[in-house]
Length: 558
Image (cartoon, rainbow, N blue to C red; front, side, top):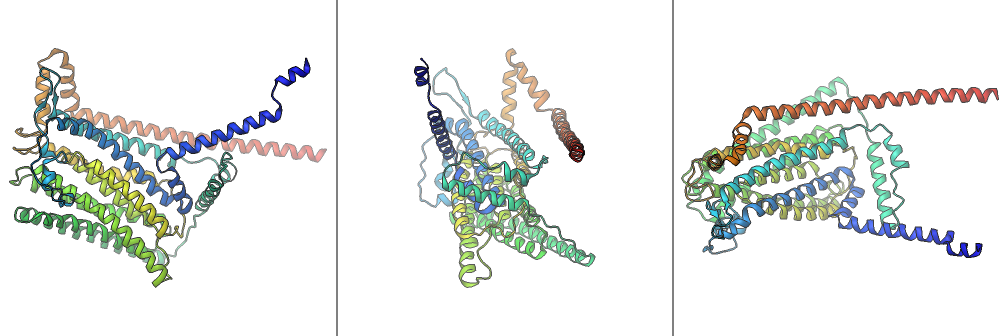
């Protein structure tokens, strides 16, 4: 009986083999799931080769790509698809130049505001109808609310990951706790080793230099001159862009489509060349850490690019909107389309001239220079500038997020190939735990230019095009809808919410106060946890010292 009983049970070796096979199967599944995650392997390679500072740029680019895919699906589903049901045939000829100018054939397509109807779409008689005016204004409005919530939530997550202090030794945890023993692939093991080596090198870097009083005064003077030069350059660029834009509107009727590219080309040239000047100023200032250099360069580029965008917004809302154009909203949409397209082309050219040719010069002509480093500040600001144009232009060109998605997708692969083949890892590694938080925070600043859409709602729409034709204001469509709902008793609660909440300044003031109080309470909770953790650590230290003394006394007496 014993022999039969033991024979029925699996042996120890069989159990070990089964456990090993299950582990291999689990590892294989995890590797396949990692491959399904978009660019997961690419990001791991970039982080291992170039560190977290360069990796943060590609993580931010991937985040923006997912963000624009979501935006495109919302606009395409609620605005563009219903318009296809009521669209009229396009009688304009396609020449190919429209791909660069956005005019001509595209003017009578769903790409621009002017093509959308102001009628209520209903394909079935006495069936459900679709109010295009309400769909257009509510889709854009809710889109901006969702954008604000996504930015706020993302910044909160990255803030929690980067600013909440670690209460343990990071180096010790990396040495003893970070290794993943489930890794079985030899290539994955080498990649993990290189990534771990880069992380430890980043965390152990942090030299502090002490300067004399004379040296501090000299460095302060250099910083002041550099800031005056950068601000003066930004003011001169904005002045030139304003006069060029006004002149561009005057010559529009007499010129061909190619003349429309003058403004976006000049703007893109300024946004491409001036950041190189800012980077040169940063090298002259000789910052103590590479992080200071990158953050100062990002701030200067932000001032430049957002000032230019602000001047263009003033031009669109105060010059184009008050001109005698038949459909000024479509003209604004075409201008933004050209700016997005030309900026994308210049971004690709920047990778060629700024990195490929620089590598050839640094490795063949002037070997002392060496291969270039990846300019994080300039490339991040290019992404923020492109996303700002998308936010401003979404009212005038609903499919702009789709165009920006294609552009970001190509930029990711071009930048990745250029990084691997042309650039070298940073000579000075530095800590970048707060990088993504800073990027999202910088994205918040131009996002407020989306308020341009709010001011647009206060302007008189065109009489002959768009879903709001014939109205005194775009926002009047909502007022008319509320008046209709007021005649139905069942919908009086909607009318009350509209008048007492949405149109109430006091409500938004109370909501903002609540958010600030919630943020303050959350911050105080974090500070309380930090104090409690410090107290517990000191208690653990005291207890360990007491036990050490007791053990020493026992050992001496024994």
